[in-house]
Image (cartoon, rainbow, N blue to C red):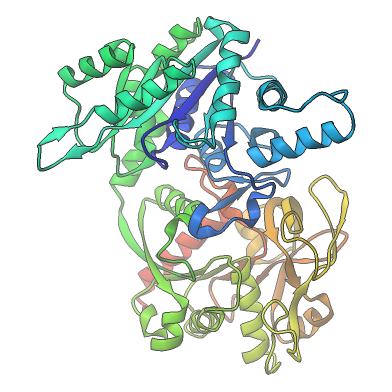
Length: 547
C-alpha cells in the first residue's frame, strides 16, 4: 500500500517546494524506500507548453512527451525515478476530464460539483500517479489561502481521512522574513498560513521554514506552540548557494526520520555520500571556464534552468567552475562579436520568435570561423544550419520558414507529420493549435559511424527528448552535405536531421542537436554531450587560443 507525503506552501510562491520535495525524495531513496513524485499545478492551462516564459519559466518535457512544470526536472535530477504524464496534472486537465465524463453521461445526469466530482478526479489522478511506489511525495502548487489551489487542498484533506493517519504526512513550507530595521525574524506569516490550512481541516506534521538567517530555538518553540506541531518538526531551510546542499541540510535536521516515524516506516540509515562528493567537486574546482550563453531571455534565467544545471553537472564531472556569461543576442546585433572576447566556448540554446535570431547567427559564425567550441541546441542547431547555408554553401538569404516565408532557401521548415513517443502518427499545419503540436518526448536517434557525435555518446543509437515544431529541410540537406556539413544523427524512418557537426579538420568541436539533452542530464552522472562540450572548452583554454 502506498503512503503519501503532501507538500504545500504558504505566504509567497516560488519558495522552493519542488527542491524540498526532490530533496526529501533523494533522502528516502537513499534509505532504500521506493518513491515517486507528483506535482499538482493550480492553473487552467490544458497545455502547459503554451505558457509564457516570463510568467512560468521553463517547461520540462518527460520521456513520454508530457510538457510539465520544471519541478519534475528536479525530481528526475535528485532521484532515479523517471517522470511521465501520470506525474503531473493541472486544474485545467482535471476540469477537462470531468467535463468529458459529464458529457458522456458518466455522472448519470447529476449536477457536477467540486465535491465530490472534481475532488474525486484529483484523488484518482494522484492514486494513478502513485501506483507501485512505497511513498509518493505530492507537491501541491500555489499558495495556501489563494483560491486557485483550494480543490487540490480539499482533495488531499480527504485523502488523509481515506488513507488513514499512518499513511499520510503533511509538510508545509513557509517564509520566515527577516526585517532588518526591527532586527527580527517574523513568525506571524507562518502562523497565519498554518491557520489557513487548519481552517480547511489540514494539520501539518512538519513545517519547513525558508529563512536567510538561522532560527533561534526560542522562535522554533514559539512557532511550534502556535502551529500545533512538535518543536523538532519546525525545520529551518537556510538559503543555500547550491540546490545540491539541501538534501544534507534537511537530513541533518532529521526530516526523513520524522516522515518515516509518522508513516510507520522502518528503513535503513540514509547514505548521502554521493551528495557530499558533488558539493565537494562544486566547491573545489581546478579551473574556471568562461562560456558565452547567447539567448533571447538571458535576463530571465528561469527559462534556461535545466540548461544551466546541465552545464553545472558537466562542471562538477570535470572539476571545473563553469562561469556562464549571459549575452543578449540583440546586443550582438548592435555591438558585434566583441562581446564574445575571452570566451572558452559558445552555446546557443533553444527559443522561438524572430527577434534576436541574426545576433545568434553572428555568434555562430564567430564560433565557426575562430574555431571556438560551439554547442547549438534546438534553435541553436537550426540557426547553425542557416549560418552554414548562407556563408559556406552559397545559399544567400537562407532562413527558417518560422521567420521568413519568402526565403529562397528554406533550410528549416514546419514538419507536418511525425510520430510521437508512443509511435502514433501526429499531423499539423500552420493553423494548428500550438498546444500539443510539437514533436515531443523521447525519440530515437541513430548516430553515424566515425562522427564526433558517435564518439561523444559511445553508442550507435540514443534516445533524447524533443520539444519543437520546425525541422531541417531534407530537400536541401543534400546540398549542405555536399558543401561539407556533416549530418551525424538522424531519426530512423523519417530520416529527420537530429545532429549536425563540422568535420574535425575544419573545426575541433562544433556540434548542433535538434533535441534537448539538458532534460536528461543529472548531477550524479552528468550528460555525455555537455561533458564533452566542457572538455572541449578546457582544451581550447589550454591551447591559449582565446580571441
